[in-house]
Amino acid sequence: MRPKTLEQHGAVSDPVVLEMFSGALRAASADYAVVISGIAGPDGGTIEKPVGTVWFGFANADGEPFSQLMHFEGDREAVRRQAVHFALTTLLATFL
Image 1: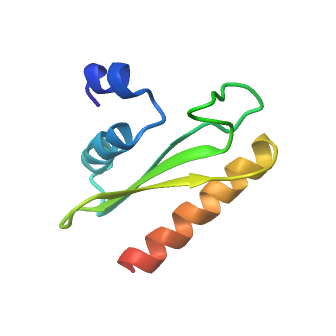
Image 2: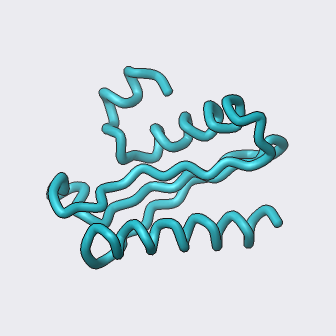
């Protein structure tokens, strides 16, 4: 990920997750990548990006990447659990 992208958009953003996936595929020599950047709480949220805001990036080695913004409710553990569930469900439904 380019430092300028992080500086301009923040870690929890569409441009950042779309850059993260290519590094993940390369670093792991993987066929699929799922990247997640979010604010699980209890602190760190803002008006624009409240706690529970999570960006996902999905890609396979042969196709176009895509991203998805989700908003989850609950405490830190609940947000993390919902994010993992969404990521795995989307990966399976999209690529397998």
